Image 1 (tube, rainbow, N blue to C red):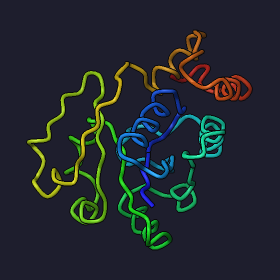
Image 2 (image 1 turned 120 degrees about the horizontal axis):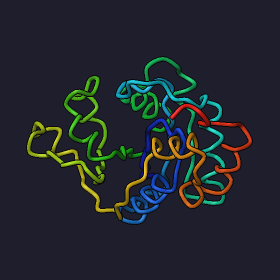
Image 3 (image 1 turned 90 degrees about the vertical axis):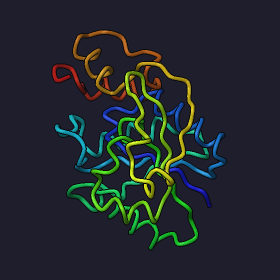
Image 4 (image 1 turned 45 degrees about the horizontal axis):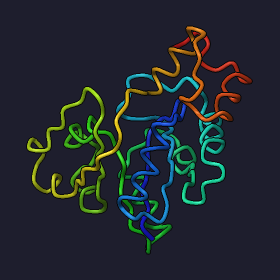
Length: 197
């Protein structure tokens, strides 16, 4: 089974995440994409504003009805810093017949040499990088053994981020069409992001 792993904070999940996952499924013939919210993301300077339970629920609401999309709480269940190598080791123990690829933005592709135990990780999985507005991809700067594991994927680009969503909520602006309706309702019902962008 070919699985695309989509990690991140998803604080909150938005339509850009869903479009990327759908596009990756189609272009790379994944059997599934697993959304994997981080417990404590090592590459972020701030902690998520929504709780882990809330972020998981927003993902469940967003992917409901899509048989190719799943959510896993493996990193939240483990707790602590969410190093991808620890997650991959565990997933490969649990699902030895699955082939995992890790989806990421171009900014994270550039940052790969700094990932925890990156050499071991590059031996275990492939990385799928997608362009992001305002980010210049620097594949030539990557060591060859990492660069060889990276597949770049062209996806429709538009500027949308979880930060933008949080800022718009805190400024009392509409987030309609930026997040699925049920996620929008969840954010409103739980008063998320109202004063903390």
